[in-house]
Length: 282
Image 1 (cartoon, rainbow, N blue to C red):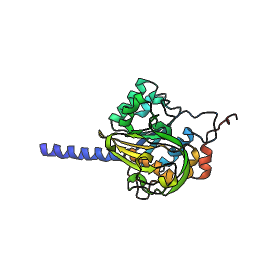
Image 2 (cartoon, rainbow, N blue to C red; image 1 turned 180 degrees about the vertical axis):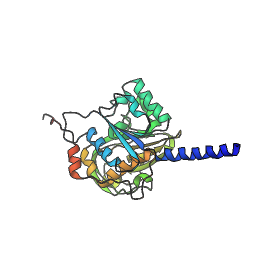
Image 3 (tube, rainbow, N blue to C red; image 1 turned 60 degrees about the horizontal axis):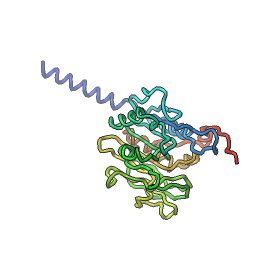
Image 4 (cartoon, rainbow, N blue to C red; image 1 turned 30 degrees about the vertical axis):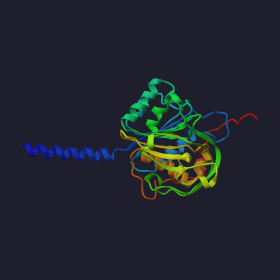
């Protein structure tokens, strides 16, 4: 009888494992407040998160939820998340830094091994959060020690990594944050994209110019970070779009196909995502 019970227990465990593997990976896309007065496409966090939502839903076994205004009204939406993406303002303007309770909730998700993605200015942290944020992301922008600006760069070298599968070269003039401050010895960091102020400095190998990287957190969980995407037009570039899409899926523990995750999207669809804006007064 004890042998039969052991067999039944083993079968039930196997079924539970299979069901867990088949369960959809829930990815939250948190869009920061998009200014009503600005150039079309600039810091359009709503449009960017909508673009990611459409792209992520092309991968079987993935489900997405988009959150607007930087933080959900009901935090239970975070329950069961495999990864959370923040595309938002930085420098302390991140909504999750606006109260100890919100910051602690992000910390709890990190402690549970939930994936974490920060895009563009979301990697910019005040000094008082520097150590905590580095433990989340592996590296951060720190005012007075890091660099930022708009310049053209040519992205041609990509190391072998699941996030770079299917990524093709691209050229762009983007708003970049570099000169980032990383964890000691860059343990767990895999640089993926570099950008300096000259084309020839945008190739692999210069730590000062790292602008895209993954972080295998020592206590479990994955983080992916990319400091570009200042404007919505960057999503038009297949290589950059593939990289960010792969990075989000990787952070959620999704296997990336050798050719990269499905990433096709039409120009009409991208244009339709743009948030209506009032132009700035000259």
